[in-house]
Length: 127
Image (tube, rainbow, N blue to C red):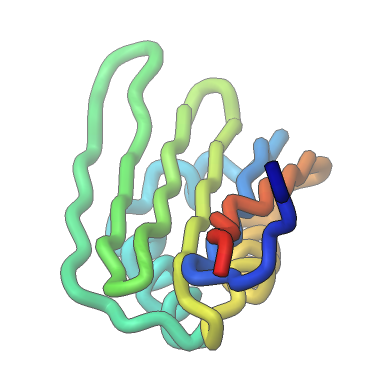
């Protein structure tokens, strides 16, 4: 059986990471985080469809912002008291750049440290 993979039909690029020691005033600012996600989508050449956000209270409270883009999604989840955030940028578009969105989000959330991961989720089909 020939297992040669030839034709990329779906271009899946997934960049995600953890941000440490972000300023509490940023971690808890729902409007600021929404604006960051909207601008990140624009910079990454993604087509923004909708943005939803929630501010959660309590000891483990924070903000969640999720942007549905035509190409897939961008998500930020923060924990105010821990000064911590997770960021997830996934795109199926050949023309969009999840790295650009991720790097912009990191710049705007101002962590002292962060980790980043990349997964190539491209599906290759036989011709």
